[in-house]
Length: 125
Image (cartoon, rainbow, N blue to C red; front, side, top):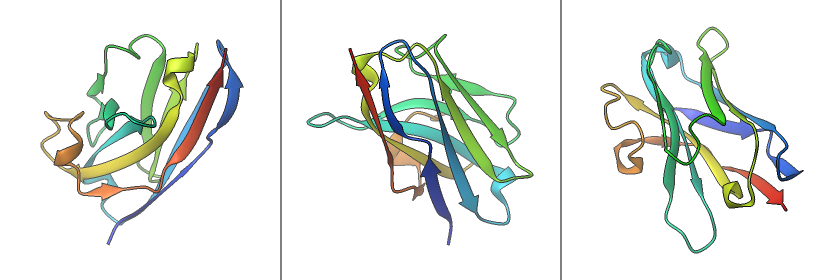
């Protein structure tokens, strides 16, 4: 059983940055696709960024391209999301997720088996 635990959420002003992290308790984390999703109140869960097992391929939602960067440290079994130039519309609960390959549907939530409990991000204008 895989456990994913997010950290790093918080409240910031528009234009500021936050870095989310997700620690995984699984021996084969370096075999898994990983991603960040978010869900704001009253909205559907949406894919934000995804990354292949080795980190060589990354995928981003159009709304965050150029502002967010996903990365992973397989030795530490950790996934990161660096969020810069945050906007009020980025406010949401952010979830990390993991699944086996392939990663072609990296931003499709229904394709993921494992989820963290979420980290709240609040952005005020």
